[in-house]
Length: 250
Image (cartoon, rainbow, N blue to C red; front, side, top):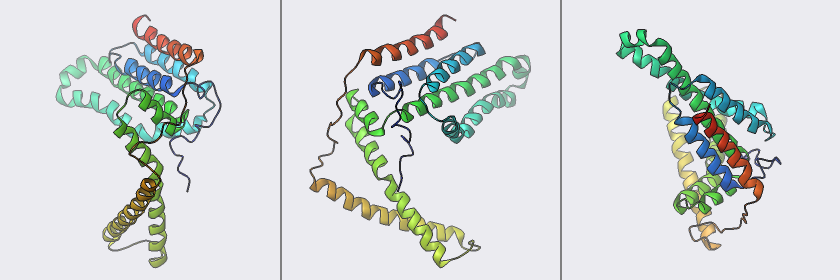
């Protein structure tokens, strides 16, 4: 079963893919902090410049545009709700203030929308330009607690067990009840979820025992050799410097 839903394009070869994963993590989260802390009253041109910088990075990653758009669409309902609820809440609670400052409030809503989109886009770029296990190893090198990276690695490696059991359970249900369920749908789905959980629990126990028999001690071995090159420092620092310049100077 395929389960490369996070780092589907992590194998591509581009200048961004070749950067050290530690620098990519630091750059992505620094960029998010710079963009998110932009005041809501900031000039909309700032966000357009941020978008231009991120788009320039996207253009050299060789990632399909449709892939990025699909990832953004997954979170777009939450982003739109956050952007719409702010002006709506002000309108409901303080109608006179909304009428007097309508332009500023709508600008703030648009700023929330752009902040969220840019932050998500940076995270998508980070997860799509590096193998997931290398990102976890880079987090360990950055002194992130081992429990977080180990649990994340186990979750990513074995979440396909649940998907596999769900597929088997759905096929078994369809073979016994052809067509759409007309009555007792909630009960049938509830029983199916329980079966999936029990089967996945049993399989995960077997997998864990197999890992222990092979010497697993609670943390994955450090098999990734990471060395910072000049490009690993120059290009991320240039990107961060441009973001800060937009924030502070322009």
